[in-house]
Length: 220
Image 1: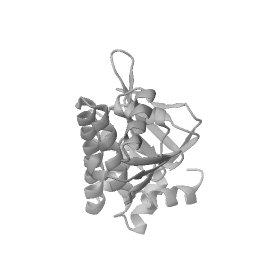
Image 2: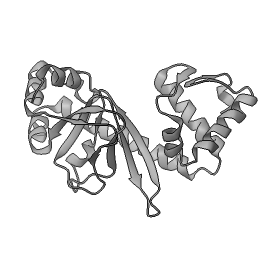
Image 3: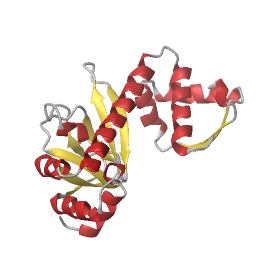
Image 4: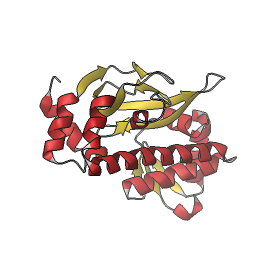
């Protein structure tokens, strides 16, 4: 696969594969295909037939859908150690969204048929796969809920609360540029900046670049 050490380390640190023993990891590493993408390069397109799924070894991948109007809605950012497109192992085997390299990125591609053979022999891995798909579905459900909220402030508040939960602190760091956060929230970048400025004026948050301290979480 090119670099076995890189593959093994990425697999070991992927939450999806956390339940695998060394023997199973060795099996998975043997079927991995390393794929690299320069920033802005497409990984796959929505509704395209999928032959497997990916794990991010280095860099990040932007997952998005394109509406009838051509507007891009960012579904998630998959970062190093994260698996994505696992749902293609089930159902019609097509990608539910498009994916593009958020930066120069190295991925590990796991072919569908070979991976499912390994899953069939490993109950803990099967549970991890189910849990991983459920996490993505939960994330997408929250996104839909956010987009249906009428208030931009509510959307921003939910985003900040989720970041606090994920990072385990009220001193959070924005992992994405505000442009891409705005796309995830379904608002314009200037609207997001205005909402953050209003929250700062009300002393709900304190902003310093990409660092945000949530002073009054109950006000979000």
